[in-house]
Amino acid sequence: MKSTPSTFWEWLTSLDTDDLAGVSILTVCSVVAVVLIVSITAYYMHKNRLHDSLKREMLDRGFSAEEIALAMHGTPRAIIHETRAAEPIRELQVKV
Image (tube, rainbow, N blue to C red; front, side, top):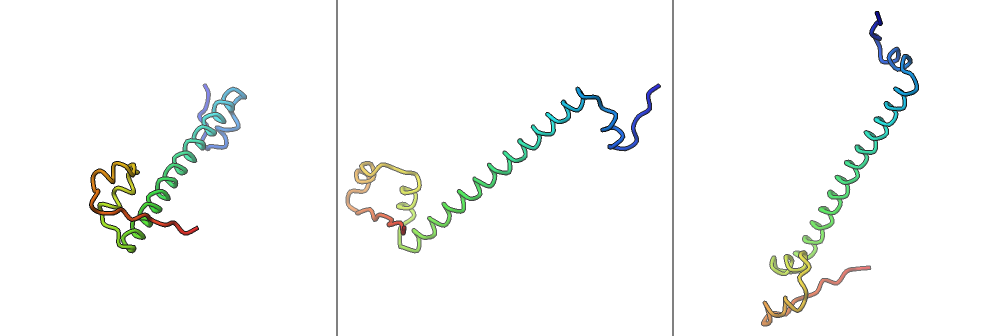
């Protein structure tokens, strides 16, 4: 009859090389998945923060909500002029 290890270290030292390879692969895949999830979350948080700051800056410069929406969605300039030909569109000058 085989006894069950009482601690993690006893269990880990009782594994043979095939078991250790499987545990190693599982550990590496888990770490990669966690890093990927954290990286994607950080990217989207940063992207949303940049969009929010750009919208605030455009509001501070006097842009209307419609102009901000058109700028954020990347509508081509020709379509903007067709839809709002009577009112000129102001362009945001980015500081470099």
